[in-house]
Length: 322
Image (cartoon, rainbow, N blue to C red; front, side):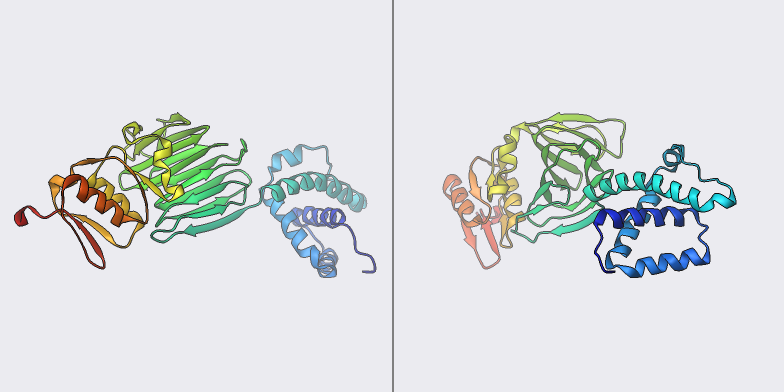
């Protein structure tokens, strides 16, 4: 080629070839011509693949409803095919814009113990992924699906009513269009914290029972389908999402429950040796990576012994050692 053509021309030609191939009756000469066209420009193969993908997903009924007359006399075959391809190319071009704006994509993310990761998603949304978590994402022109395999993540969802954003955490589903919320997967369900907008929550055990939860909600959703329960006693959404700033808010927790939270972020484990100490209530904000400071506060507050080694922080003494 002596002159490089515009992308619009390439896409139009690709759509015309895809329309011809879609009919399934290319002659030997036409097949050779298509092969020659594909080899003529490095852009042709990619453009043709995108155009062919459009034909595989377009609603054929709508396409055929257009006033395009593909059934023509044999003597007018070339004219009919060209006119049909041109009209169908217009439909394909519009669909191609949609595919380019909302492309199919997939991704997977994982964090190790103590790591919090911020990622930008292909649709303009973003996610903050908490410690020891894993999730996979699938984006299509019609939907955005996130599978939270373990752990917790906060999502800032780009608004797009035609492409719902749905997070799956085991049997729990959380659906949003444009909002911000966090989901933490747990053995018997999930916790959901809504920071902006409204989300719809349900369990696959009772798909017809759905709850709309507004911003400020902090809920536990059981997998059984019984409906969400408020976690207001554990503080507000800010407390529940303090991990995004590397902190833990222990409002409404017992010492034993707080130890479980610290153990999510640290390889050095906290062990509560005294069950009575474990039931004590505690309020405070701590750094997720400072379990030693937490242990010191517990020891001073409740007069409990604290012993440490390379892998363990032990709070309190077992009953038989007291």
